Length: 411
Image 1 (tube, rainbow, N blue to C red):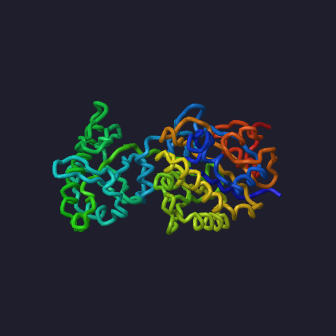
Image 2: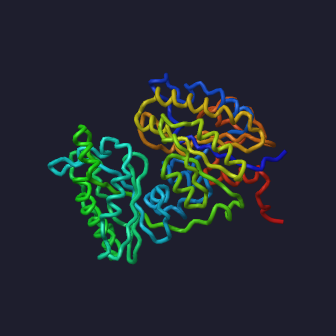
Image 3: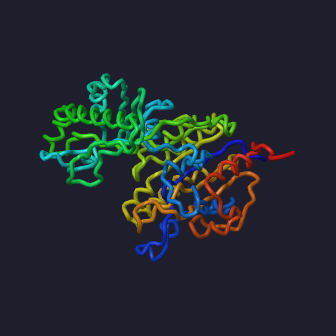
């Protein structure tokens, strides 16, 4: 029997390096993972450089590569992809920024870059959309909330460039910076002028917004400023359905991943209760992925929480959440009719608290797969598997061939 469907599960940042707190083991090695281990033992395994050996991937460039879109050709910056994931329909030529709400104190300095991790900024975004007027610049703005304190900004108009700086000083205790052009091009100067005026008007709107008044009365940090970064020019993506001759969906709480999926033509599936953190409803995510496979050929599902523990340097927490993930994946054991690929998009070592260039573990399990001798899913065990060492750009061709949809190269 040949599988007809593909489920690609990306365990965001799950790979790691040996941790002192875990007696020199990685969180994957230290965790009890009977489901992942069984899937590995029933499939073929290997290690994978999602970009290339020694290259530290961003989540954006890694996911593009894993979907078969070489980042050196398609990647123009995180901002446009984040904007797409926040529900802004990005057209080629639009400029996108990542954004988040922050708190500025009475001296004009940033006291909290995440505005007390405010849970929702929808009314603030609405007020900014309604109140900011950039018509004198000939520019239309789009501003939408993301999860929690996050948001996205997009600009549409003639003569815009993407080579501009951020207003985020990256540290608290400093005032927001001026947006500046990074080249002498008039288009970049135009974007810098537009962005600075957007930020000025936004701050005036936020200063006395009812939600911020309520937060201050409750002793909470007001979300009275916007920080923007990651400017990029929206490019053109070959539709996934044309590139791989498959229909597909993306399931992710992270706006970035949803945006990448949407940009290439995958349908974004919104699921209540998924957060992108350790409190996410993983059961709902797995269940919806299975139902999506009833109507689609391909599903990309991102599970993110382990990455946060890596960034925070919490090895034990990462180990424990890996065990939660493993339990949630139990229904996949019964799915012998589909091709299941499980990997990470990058390594996030607790010792580094950031991404690294280490390869990530990969397993593929499904009908007709050549089963190797690997019996455990971790960074070391899978290296002896039948896939050996591959790159992220190899994954989709391998999966498409395994479901017998690849084209012959030559006569």
